Image 1 (tube, rainbow, N blue to C red):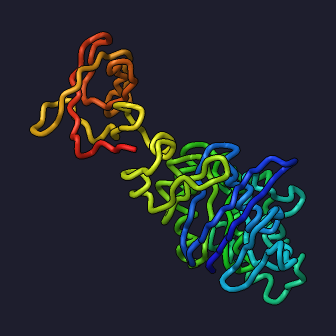
Image 2 (tube, rainbow, N blue to C red; image 1 turned 30 degrees about the vertical axis):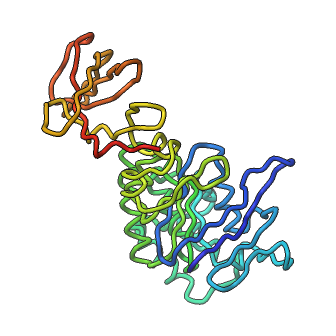
Length: 317
């Protein structure tokens, strides 16, 4: 399913949250809306789902208009065939795993082959054996899988994820990133994922939409966003960046602590160091600008460190 948002705006109490947004989510693509808190990413997700009403503009699913202020169209959420995975799991504590997953089907009065469809969804997330347990008897990762099974059991054309991994610990987040990506690929559905975590966005997405104050800063494949940021905001928000001036930066991995032909030398002073296990993180002062570089060995705080930069890798704005 292709999702098209045309000239979408959203205001709360005369404050613009989204401003004249034009966004297209491609069919069967995993698209991440990435940005800081308050940038409007969850509002966009909820407008797609029909849980929020835009102040202006139109939303299309393929060629079907699901919202238009001008045409007086506003299709309710239950008629949009969307699956939604929430941040806080949103499971009914008094219902078993099976009944939590079946809830949407029962609410729609869609009971045909209900047991098989629910069990197929539970098997997809490897929870079939937990069908009779209650949410309190599950781990956080298992609860999130129940939420995912509930989203896919209705066979939606699109699944929306609202920061679904933020409540999990670091190891579980890594596991669920792989799991969510695997399942959405196997189901061949359009997926829209909201996060402020750049690692989630970079590792999972086919395409990233970077948002700032209700507008799109940049959109593209993860490699493009990281290697060729178009704005200072994108460069600072995505990955680590070291700044040579207010409008020129380089990524730490493009620099070297060893002299190389064609690289320009910059003198810095080491202000701090952290042991990372495999390497050391150096915190450097480069004529008043703060740089971070990884090194294979320890340096003494206060020592002078030469950094060699490939000027072809410097990004300017």
